[in-house]
Image (tube, rainbow, N blue to C red; front, top):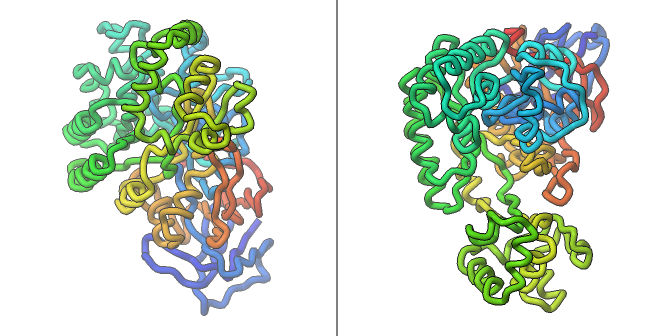
Length: 512
């Protein structure tokens, strides 16, 4: 079907200009871009979409998706399409769904569930090629895949320290993954088994030589680490010494001045590597489990042991004193979920408001929850101020991403991160939106992407006035609004809030 999108405000990030015009699509590619004064043979097209002066932009990238399993089980990808996402980068954080041999499948369950969710599906693949083949041409979005270091490490050996045989097996798995379509390797600094290899200089040296040979990307997840700057410096040093593009993720620094100083440092050092990308969440809040409020010595106890300990008045007072000293954000904390029946009606409410309504202090409420619901209650708190996020997104290399699950729980990022960036941090400026979500990531991944004749037609028609997301930690699966039409590889697949076309997303590394 030949398609014309007419009367659109077209923004081309390569030319850095916008104009009223149209774009024709024939087959899977853009045939022509028309200016306002062009004579357009409207009658020759099978379908004409009147854009009504909405913005037509190159399709958006989600550079940190954890949709690895969802692409097999829920391959329509509504959460992504509703935000204008046409490319998802999976295989993140050093752990994914391939390569996983059938004999080792059960070993991977814990990691897969905590990071990617646990959809009910039959495992039908082992290699990277077999996994990608299952989704190529059958998924709602295009895909880029990182070979996950931790997954490959478990396949190579169960020992934290690899023997020479284990190292050889790991090297082979990476080489094979890159040959089968992976665009790089993801590593976790904090999560075993990947972190064991990250700390092994010889292992990293061996793997980075393979990446250099194959022109692969090094992706380093820095979640849950103490010395962020130290690990960032190490990542930059490794990428620089091997001439690798560097993708950083998982950075969370609570102190505003420290966070901003780190971003400024990265901005100055980005020329040290062939390409730098940092993905962050545009949501300033994070989840915290009730058990995480406890002193270190109590965190290691079982829920029942904690309950018994807290029945001692002196222990309970020590815990409350600890919370009072260390949890500066307590008045901003919001209850997301609890199994304590008399408090369930307060899910979604600030702890301070619950305290006022019940007439109990915040500490009395927390103590009650610690005794009766320590392993089930989850709170939400402000981890990063909006002003710091605004400062972060002013840097070209800092991109929003959906990230995914935390301990198997959906976060609002999955259904709302890209939309939230547009509505909160782009000033709804089409140039900022296109350059942040399309131009920069396409250049980083070395792709021909945009609004030019001959390029693959991956386009989003954006109703900028109606871009919003109601997704939050209480209702994380609220579908975003604003992406009116999406054309994926030449086909209309999203129209006014519904999937309407074929699932024709491609494994991009197979089609370059």
